[in-house]
Image (cartoon, rainbow, N blue to C red; front, side, top):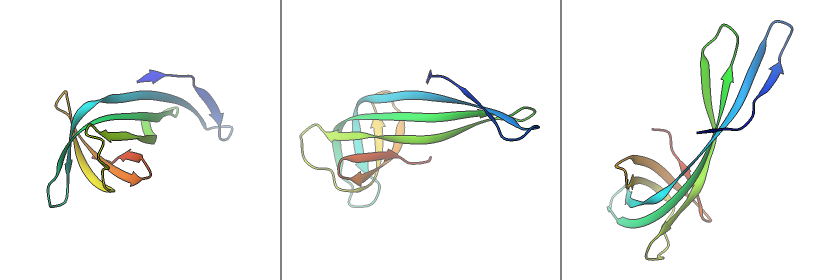
Length: 111
């Protein structure tokens, strides 16, 4: 993930936290499989921009809060992909659960 810049937030005299936004782009080609029957498989290209806010509080653990993970998945044969949940099998062997939200917008689901 790429570190952009951080900001310090003073919540009270005794509580200060630092937020650092981190960005990562995940893209490539892979295989998209429906989660629900009937099983359908499509060869796709994908791109997701993931933004996480890393929050640090004094005397506390570091917490990463994913704030945005939207992207696009396009069928290589240009056929439309119906709305719903899918398993995206990436070229490097990772399996990512994704959902077609409609109107060309996709989101990564929590594992």
